[in-house]
Each structure stands twice: as structure tokens, then as C-alpha cells.
Length: 231
Image (cartoon, rainbow, N blue to C red; front, side, top):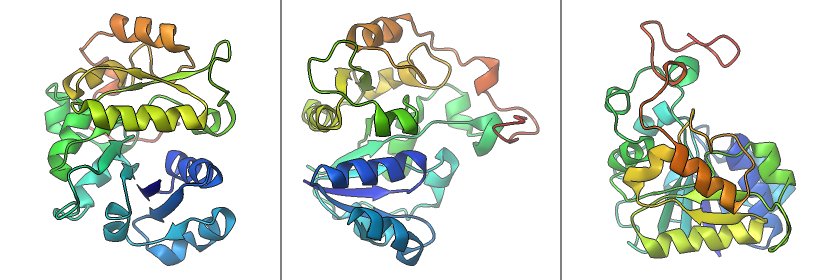
């Protein structure tokens, strides 16, 4: 499969490495330009490209950048990209640690619905609740006891099935987490976030989620701080 990845941080870089190793044709971009990705490209065999090229790289495009930086992407980034290309949002809103206040999310809009509106393109929310190290190291063959599962939310059943199939290749079970309006169930602070549940555990955690954001995941007057010292 041809896959574009926008962002080469912890999750983005891990996906470049894992998906390239599985034989997928990966194109990777970041805000600093292709030259800054030369080492990653040499290591993995991925192609370092511009953001616009990554958005047009193939059948799946993964957007994996800090939430606040979504607003810095070109407004026409997905203009002309075929409708059957699956766009994945891996992001999380960290108001006190990194992103500052995003009013719509503070008022209750699910994070990925906000991302979708910024991109002008339907998205699937996935890969947001797992540590990059676990994504790199903890995949297991299908049927393994305790195999880690990840929630996948979105409005298009076909798009979700594409990502669930990719998860299976990576060594994880995918759990259909409903439409994008339900994706708040996998946001930071919920029972499924930053956990390694199996499929049954993911379903239980999603069902136990409460919609109201806790204070740890809401903006403050002096947001943002840092992950070590949140505002």
C-alpha cells in the first residue's frame, strides 16, 4: 500500500519505521522540509517529501502533528485528493502541556471533529491512545492471548476497515469505536487512553468513558506549560 505520513515525531516516526518494514511504500513529510528527514529516509527506505506531496502519496494519509499545528497546514492541503483516500488523525489535545486553548474543543467538540473541520476532509481517529514505544515493540500475531487492541473511530465504515487491517499487520487488534462524534471516548483522560487493553478491555473502557474533560486536560489562563511542568 502507498501511505503518506505528515509528521515524523514519536508516533509518525514509529509508523514510518514499522510500515516501511512491512513492505508498504511510505512517503514522509514534516514542517522543516524533506532535507531534515534524510536520515530517517536512509534508515527506513521511506521517501522524504513535502507536506503537499505526502497528502497525495497514496491510499492512506496519516496526519500526526501537535494539535495546535493543524492550523498551520495549508488550507487546500487535500484539494483534489481522491475521496477514497483514508485520512487518519492520531492527534491529542494537550492544552496545559503544549497546545494552549482551542475554544471549540474546550466547548465540547471532539478533538478529531475539530481536526476534520480544519482539514476540510473526513478523518479516522486512530493511534492516539498508545505509547510510541509500545507501537514499535508490542505488536503480536493475530490470536495471541492479550494482544493489544486500539480503538478506531470514524464515520466511514470502509475507511475504518482499512485502518483496522493495517493495525492487524502491525500486530494489534482494531476495535470499531463508532462514529467520529464518539471519538471523545478515546481522548486523553479517558479509561482507554495510554493503556494496553485487549479488545474486550478496550470495549469496556470506551463504555466507561465520561464526556466531560477533567481539569488536567482543560486549558488554564496561562496555558501552555510543558509535559514536565504543565500550566
